[in-house]
Length: 163
Image 1 (tube, one colour):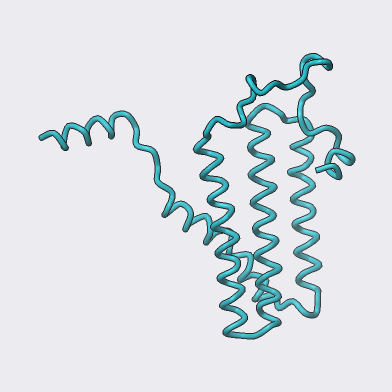
Image 2 (cartoon, rainbow, N blue to C red):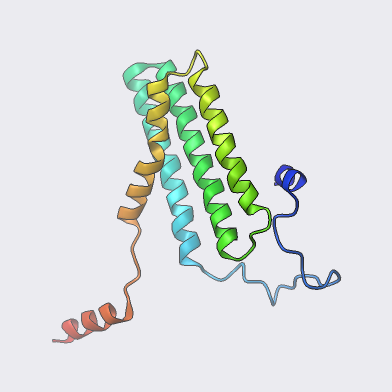
């Protein structure tokens, strides 16, 4: 994070008063947030899918394919992590340099993809297989993450239970 702040400036808005210190009573970091939990779970599922794809590539095609799949899965996981963090900060109103971070992420993604596809040890098809960890992980995380019921659905479910 220090590299990003050094290149693009501070990533958060400064506090209102420079002498104000954050207190534990004002901290909101301990409040449960279902959006953060779902995003964290999605990131873990994407990483897990990448590991499964890498292991499958190793068993089916050998070390070269597993290396390409691993590099693609790592790139997909890092892409999701940076995207989730920058979108979260943008939605909180901390636009500052997070827009620049999103642009830099896109350029870095293009550059790393170019380097990976031109590397002699990385199979392009295996690299693409590793990149598939992102959409597959998002789908699997969406299938297994329980959505909170709305008030109307909860009320109708309670009425049907009593009948």
